[in-house]
Each structure stands twice: as structure tokens, then as C-alpha cells.
Image (tube, rainbow, N blue to C red; front, side):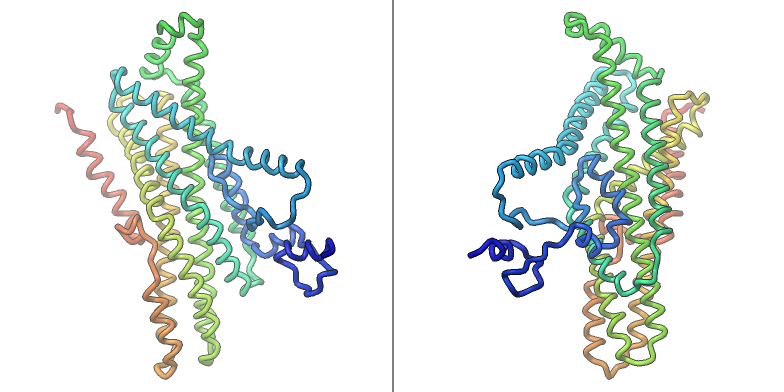
Length: 413
């Protein structure tokens, strides 16, 4: 067997039947098949930075071409290890910061603040693990959405792409800056007690590492705040971006359904809606628990910011990051709730429009519609509460009611 025949066996994308001619696809041509990768590219890259490796292009098979050079194998292994380094680095940081938080609860006087911090760190770690488990579903959703968007080639997604990137860059930049300010320029009682412990500890005095010990604690705290802020912003932007794309597709499908003059013209909208319904089912199955964690974390941040404004007589510079995180949490919570609720409304309206436009005589189409609507899942908060617009008022009212009750505990009139 000649060399061209061997290459044809290892090339799954070969279109020609002859073994003598082999056309290897270029990587740029592979990405054209998935145009929405350009919309999600910045999100995917930042996910890789925080330890969640996502495929930016279609996954290439390991044995796609025969490996005859040992140098290529070594380079491939080195690149694979480099891609996994952020994940292990982030896990080590989380382990160190959880150990430090446990020490804070045991030794510091302000145990409520330490308990709040360790709760947020644990929730962030659980959010990271849940997103990491669903990383394949992210790229699978972009593939299905790209398949539907091919039916609407005239639509331009540049506006959605630029707005999402601008929001993401702004929130990540300011969050990282405030994490640095909070950890390296804080004058709170907790930081003062940690500094005294590092300076008077027998181990650090014996090794002459008093200053390095406290700087290490500050650096680890800064990194964990930065990773948590980036992860929090990334997931909310990704989830809302998927919901916005679903809204755009459903709006186009509704226009096609309303313009349909015959039953034959309803076959294509029904087929495309089946794909969009699968995307929503995938979002619900993979990320409903992450939405719950994100909502809890944002409400904790909002409560913390409201407590500072309402019950503290003097506001120091140390409270500025907490106030900002509360505002950012509220904005991202609004993004998730509003985008998901509109997507649910559009999906319900599409099902209703299809059921009204398909006549009773078309039993096959009506059977397909009943099957799709029966398998369809609305976006929810961990399958506890279906996301709708009233959740915004409900969450704010819950914070006001129970926030005042909790804030007045221990107060003497």
C-alpha cells in the first residue's frame, strides 16, 4: 500500500474516493463550520485561564494522522500538560485558601466575617466543579445553535458579540483591580491579626520569613478573589448570551411561522424549533445547578452590601470591594433572570403558534409537535423555580424582608 493510501485511511474528512488523491482540511476551514465560536471565543479563553479547558475548535482525533516522529509526540505532551496547568494551579489555590479560612474561624475574633468568606469560597469551588463537569455541553450547544443559525445567514451577530465582550472585559478588569486593592491595601482587623500572627509565629521567626508569610497570604487571597470574580462574571455572561441567541432564533422562527401560507412551509420551522428545544434542554440539564449557586452567591453579595449601607455607621475603604461585588452580583443576576425568562416566554409562544397553525388533518406534524413539546424543558433554578420576570421582584423582596430581620438581631433599641 502506498503512502497516499495510508493517509486516506487516517483522514476521516476525505471526500474523494480515490486513494491516490488526498486533501487535508485546513484548520481555518474547520472553524467555518461553527461560526458561533467567534461569539464565544473570549469566554472560552477566559474559562481556560480559570482552569476549565474548553474546545475552541472541533476536537481533533488523537490518531487522525500516523505519528512517525518522536519530537511531535513530545511537543504534543508538553502542550497537553501546559493546558492542564491552570486547572491544578486553581485547585491548589482553593486548598490553601480553605485552610486559611478554617484557621481564621478558629483563631480570629470576627468569626461571622470569616464564616461568610469560607461560605463564598466553598460555593465558588462547587460552581467551578459543576461548570467543569458540563464543559462538553457548552461546545455541544454552540454546535447546535450554529446549525440553526445557518438557516438565517443574513443575521449579523457582531452587535451581540461586542456588547457581551465589553461587559465581560469591564466586569473582569474592575473585579481583579478591587481584589488587589482589598488584599494588599486593607486595614481591617482581620488583616491586622494575620499580620501579627505571621510576625510573631515561632516558625516564621526561626526561618526569618515574617514578611514573606503575610505577603503569601495576601497573594493567595488576591488570586482566589480574582478567580472567583472572573468565574462569576464568565458564567453569567455565557448563560445570558446563550439565552439571547435562543431568543433571536425563536423570534426568527415566529416570523417564519406567521408568514407561512401552506403546511409545507411549517416543516422547516418545526425542525429548527426541535433543535432549539434540544439546546434549552441541554442548558437546563447541565447548568440549572450552576444558576442556583450563582443566584445564592449574588444574593449573599447583595445582602452584604445592603447591610453595610444600612447598619454600619461609618463606611471604610475596606468595604468598597464588597459594595462593588454586591452591585456586580445584582447586575449579573438580572442578566440571568431576564434573559432566561424571555427565552422561556418565546419558547412557549412558539409552541402555541405552531399548534394553532398546524391543521388537524396533519397528524404527523401534530404528533411531532406533541413529542417536542412533551420533551421541552423550561429554564429554571435547579428545577426548583422556573425562571420568569417575577423572580426579580421576589428576590429583592426576600432580601429586604429577611435582611432587616437578620440585620436587627442583637440590636438594642
